[in-house]
Image 1 (cartoon, rainbow, N blue to C red):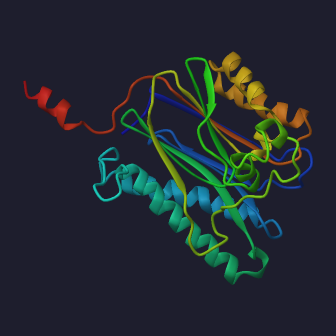
Image 2 (tube, rainbow, N blue to C red):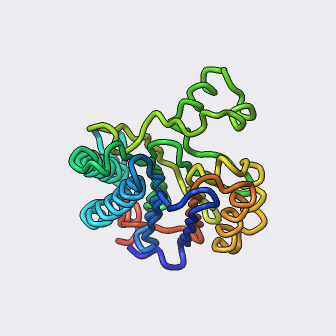
Image 3 (tube, rainbow, N blue to C red):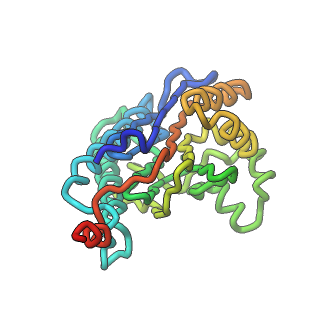
Length: 273
């Protein structure tokens, strides 16, 4: 289906002030309601190879197979929607491609990438993520982090060794416990939720979340939600203003209206009368 006039997606990526090249990658397909952001790591400029493979593989795989399924139909064996299972298969394929390349090319040894990906299906949202790239949501003035980082720091927070405030000052921010391509298998986390008109979703690399705290990110989005391109530029600019120690990438998506992917059996029944 086309999401014209129902979903707006914009993206901004920037090298930052301290890095010589950009190892982040972003991609979106507003027509199919898809967005993917990856933050690469490892090897001489190999991080950008890993992140690019992840974004292109996930977008390509999900987009190619959407036409053959009803993405909100629930799979009886797993309890997940068909759309979520597409993301699972796509991430697993990206993992295999990156892992194989890292093993076969010396210049790519040790490369991997985090990823956060979303799909908007029939007023529902699928979220898939690996690592510490994040998804946030602004809904009716309430801003919250949707994903939970796969990182050593998050594990220490969960165990009570750090408060979230103390964690912002830690030197262990970038030690991820899961990434795509570093092992022969990967276990993504998935979430499914309903989407409301007016919801704004922010996908970001840690180049934003490590530099700008959640309260300031929320304030920027609340003040500039009417213009997502402007909001994205301001978020990136703020991270650079605070040092720009890493690459900075954001994707912003806003639900403009209700949308449906394929007619449910209920709506089909009503169409008969």
